Image: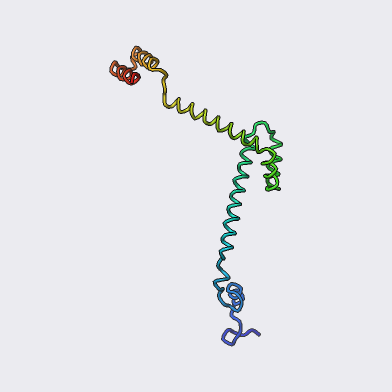
Amino acid sequence: MRQSPAQGGARPGADHYAAANGPAGRAPQESETSMSFGDVLWFIIISFLFVAYLMVLFTILGDLFRDRETSGWVKAIWVIALIFLPFLTALIYLIARGGSMAERQAKQMEEIKVAQDSYIKQVAGSGGSPTDQIAQAKALLDSGSITQAEFDALKAKALS
């Protein structure tokens, strides 16, 4: 027969309270809940290494799909290997293809620079020499697209 809490029996839910608050129903001590300096330092180091690993992983994946000489099947094998044996595969990839990895990145950066320079020249509207700019303005004046005052302004701008 169960005793009521007033008669000295266990309270309903007392087991849950004891499990949450430690043995004998006491609250956990500060040393049980706080992290030591070593724990914090270890957490920072592990976090840094994890972020560095992710950067290496995404660099490898980017290089792998940037390479036009590697077939799709070989790329699939590298990706599968990166999933199942990530550290070993990353190390092998960096040793085996590290040099060509740098060459591909340098080539892509050069292509981007050429495209950017071309775009800047196109947007800036460099019309060539002042003579060419005046000739273009004269053609616009002759076609009636601009007035004599606008032609004079374009001519002054080209000569300045």
